Length: 211
Image 1 (cartoon, rainbow, N blue to C red):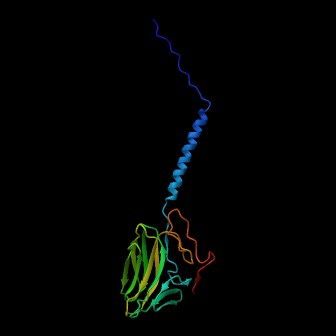
Image 2: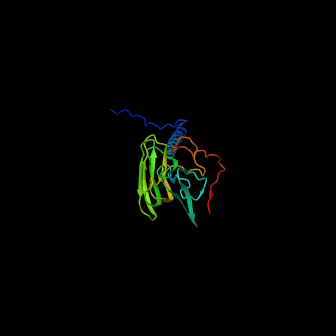
Image 3: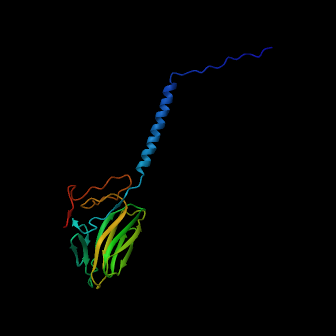
């Protein structure tokens, strides 16, 4: 007795076969694009110098100084001199906008006994160093911001009743946006997905360099 013969199944093409495949491919490409955009948005900000007028060679001055502090210069060389007294350490400071949980480096070129440079922040970011050399020398201070820190104060000063000091160059580098020549507005700190802050007092402000 012969075994029953079953007909070979035939492949059927549904009307929507090719269209369904194209739809799946389109969805896959869209998902990949979305992932790519999310990855791009999370990319870290570039490292920039967040200090304005760090060479003391231009206006707006930006630095906030107390006591007996004055700009000095010789051709192609600008610096700040401070003379402390019994009541003042001749301090200058500048506020910079930073990102939380990020690392930054303060660098300064100084001269004179008891020339201090440092950083302070509301999150406990207090770090400083000093030099007693009478010739120009470099100082560096690393600092890491806390989880809620969006602003730091960079400063330099001498010491009470000590001799004058000089500061030639100050930089503060780390992740962020290049500050506007007139300074930043009092808006929240940038994140990796934000744009630069609106400048103050006006977008047309330009720096004027001292000869």
